[in-house]
Image (cartoon, rainbow, N blue to C red; front, top):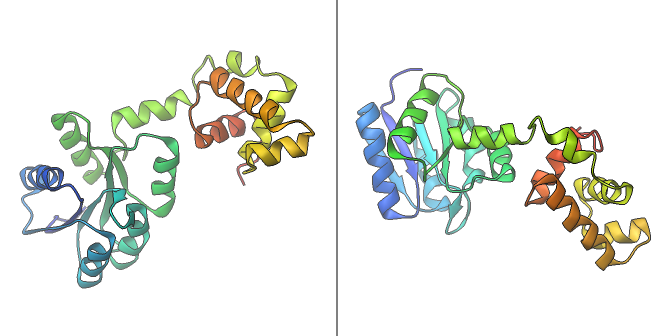
Length: 214
């Protein structure tokens, strides 16, 4: 990676933006660090670039910061775009990586760990916070085969339909059962597979071979 001279920080909380500024300055000693708090202002900065590094928050006042990742990478093809966020769920993680993010760091990680992970990304090492990497490994925990075997046929049916994008209501109609019965099955699935979101349930369904990821 070439020297980092121009940095863009997209963060709407002033204290956090200043903290990120300090982290970057201590680690890289860049010539310029620009800070903006909205998607709109970030787009203007990206257009006026170039930048060697962007740190992008996801929860911005005027939208999801993931919308900035692809435009940034298109304009700054050899630069790095790292998501810095509080969201530690698979849905935000995979959405960011699919958009082209070069890294995904949690802002609530300990300060030394955050700096170390950012340095690692710049050096070409795995682009994830340690806690995020652990979350990914949990998706394929060795005990998972024991948990998945406990699903009933109806629970596997409802999981398959939900993972394919159907709502609980439409999944119920497809299976010829009531909405309340389907919701009960889905609650059981979440509990047995130890997931909390549709995205996590979908990952489990793919791992179980119930849904083709393509």
